[in-house]
Amino acid sequence: MRLTRIIRTEDGGSAFEDGEIALERRQVADGVPAMAVGGLPSRDGVQFLRSAAFDSSAHPAPREQWVVMLRGTIEVTVTDGGRRRFGPGDLVLAADTTGLGHVTTGVGEAPFEALFIPL
Image (cartoon, rainbow, N blue to C red; front, side, top):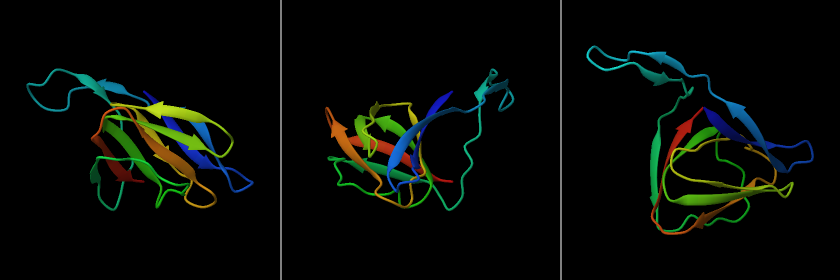
């Protein structure tokens, strides 16, 4: 499964980096058909976010965390000029915890919903 990392660059900015999570087909419970399963390392609790607006000024991530988009679309702009949109089902690993960070903007109809999963 495809994922996008937001990383801190050597100059203190941010950039996108593409990656993948390995999925394996396995049965997760008796009576349930086999499905694709992959791990997302986490600690310190998962947060659910719902917001009517998802616009921010430039900021680093408060901690390394997975952002799993559930509803709505956001656009993230990093300091190297890259801009990407993420919607339901997209995985982003926000790892730019220092430096200039990134800007997040809500696109389209609110509310925006996401899971924040600390790494």
